[in-house]
Image (cartoon, rainbow, N blue to C red; front, top):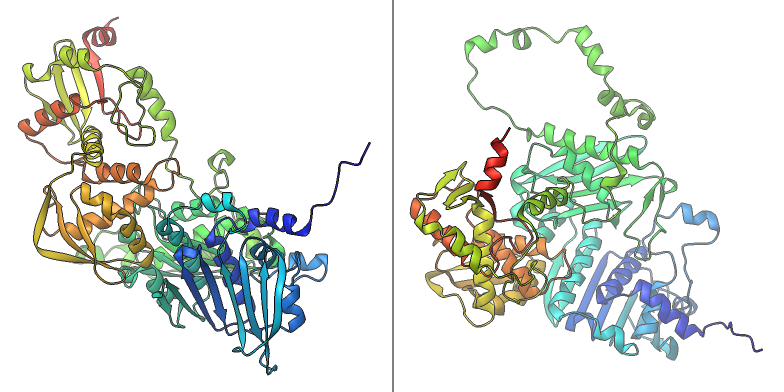
Length: 632
């Protein structure tokens, strides 16, 4: 019987490795940018065509390579950073596995030009399908230029899985922002199809943050600076008024490497507790520097997840550092008033800070944490954090277990029923006929409606009453209205007498460009005006004049919130975002006419009982249930 096990040919092994390392154009961008940083470059240029599908090129002015190194760098597991096993535990560079260029060469046509400062002539290498097809001397600038052409040309199945150019370009911009944010002392530029997207001059971290995330943060950043024997933390957090409904502007770096950590994100969220709304997310850009021996960066192919030797210590330091920064800048809630003479006579104001009080303060755990040698070991144990709260992803939501609450509501409502308009995704439809319940309730004939706490509406029925959640009810109404608009009944747009200009970050501009055709059907008439600017020519009639810009900015924020769920199409995310944004909010007082119209519109929906996201819109209290509540 013949042997059945055989070694894979190198080009097949490289393609398998490429499946882990190069998943999309943005993956290659990340690897090439990190190599340029490791090469000691001070200027790094990224050139993209067709969202990376036809060209990804990185040009740097780093140290360059010899002819032998230039040829060897495309071999698998070829690296200049690892010599012995101990080196794995002292990694300070970005790339180290030696898989990136081999993977790139396995799935693209690659051209490399490189020259060292001490060499008069450089090296040109052309590779296709892991095979060197050309190598010769060439005249080139000091540094390295590596160009990937026709990504996945030899793996058509992988190429077919790529998203639209706008979607792939957003991923590229994300990777570019992460690398360039970590190294503000370096020049970076990004151009796409001949147009410059970013031009980032060398500067401070604050300048780089504002360049990348937008000028709205210029006066809304709080500096974080904590140095300890165990680790150092620096960077910025946003003031409470900069909090958003999405996690987008949140960045953790460990030893200048971008990481995802739901655990550390929870530490920051705890520091903001009671300062921002429960459904908001703070902005932060935080750099953690610690001994490489205390972390393992080799736990994931993309190196975006790492393991800490003692994650509880890191958690405590991050939380304390952010709290300290917020307190220093008087961000925590305070009462503002003029101090009267009586207050000035109080002991706390008039008497000095005694030695006994000073001693008590210096013996506190927080004081020792940041002042004593090896202070990491003096951290006081706080309440345990259940491991069930974390699953290792960056998309965690630590605002409580809402699913359990919704389940209880649904138990009371009975099975989720009804069938709404088919757009995409799953809005909970199962084909129930709502005609009979509508006739049974017949709200218009049974007395006045009552608003409760500016949030609920009590609508009497012959058998009892319905308790409507006004925001969720309106969301359901708008969802079905927008769904109908996208399949043939466009929302009427009201043209503006004075069109407003809208300036966005490059990432948001790319997203809006992708949404413009569908937004036109929903009443938003938006036209590109320059590279990252737009003109708002018209909006739905219910948008108050002067609020056009904020309405679209909030819509983008909400859309990115829904974008974390990949099972929904672009259109589904868009109409969910609009329904959420335009729905009347809790606390809005309604007239009798408005309440009656809301209740009527809800019961005329194809599926009135839940929102598209599964929240109940009403609960029915019938006479039998009410009788049981008061029975002995």
